[in-house]
Image (cartoon, rainbow, N blue to C red; front, side):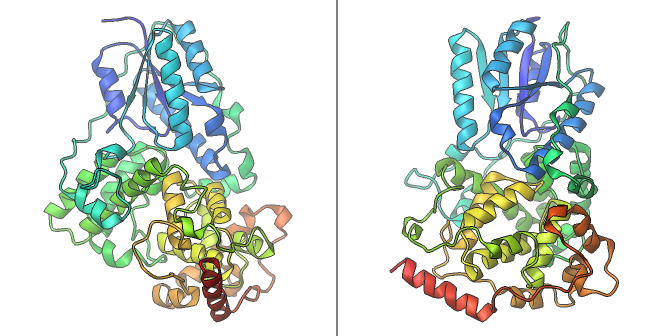
Length: 471
């Protein structure tokens, strides 16, 4: 048994159970040195995501301490930090769980190559996904481009059980210096909104696993029917926040969903499909790494998108005059999340009725979501905009008023988030004005704005733009 510590480089995998890399490391019997590196790639993430990362790191550090371990924090380029830790701790090996976006892959490949060139061992392990992107192929040997065939391809596959959390982590004889999480100021860009958003987070593995059980024991049964109604409490699992930071493993969710199916739970399969939708997003993002910056469909490169404008500003601030759109945008600013049905509505309104480039919306979501997932964000925006992976043969334009009548008929969702629509607005609606920057000069007592554009005119304009852009 080697006494040289094994460096475990944690990233978006802040959990102890269902963790292949951690389980394999514990099995070696060697001293383990958990590390988190705030490298340039991580520094670029949005304000809400960075804030939520800080919460997750603080909690994960406490969990490690309970097992007799620590989380070493270092800031700087990943390779330089790892090389310094190797020298300080006498380590000879570094492991990590894989990431699948292009910048992370480039970084990880460079780190692995450089460490191996120095005679050190470096290993990457699966963990973030159930199915590695290169392991799911069409009959012709290429990646899938449509969800339904992808779902059929993975539905019957055997998936390894979720591994239990270790009871103890062997520690090295001496710990290297760690930076202080507070000194990183990961909540700085959130300004006064940090306290508001913090109240809506359920941080850590314990709460994630409890969340899964609570959902599976009750709301999952009605999931297929209730998941499209944003005002229905607990109609969805809420696990996107925890999945985004690896506070719960996807195999844990997969097996709980299949157990629900075996028990006759009516909503279990629909829930599993949504989990696999996340897998599909990463499948696409791995094979098409420009999905977050370039139109998926080449014939959309000439579409006359508008750039930033006063209309886009009103959309970002939840002041478009379309109540369903504004309610959703304010929900995101207060909670760090947005209901999935609402995400489709606000994205369609921005890209179709306001003809604004989907990349502006993608960036705003990346800045405001605490459950930000780069693959799901990119695929979702392109799917709604019309330029992405979608099997539908038509140009989809959601009517926010029609969607509101269908999915918020009693206006509960809209009134819950828009203070100007009620005589006695509740705390959720008012908290938006507490979270918004003072520079926006928003006031809950002012009249609600008039619509930016007539919905019928906006639809007609979008169809004309489609005809011109693809002529």
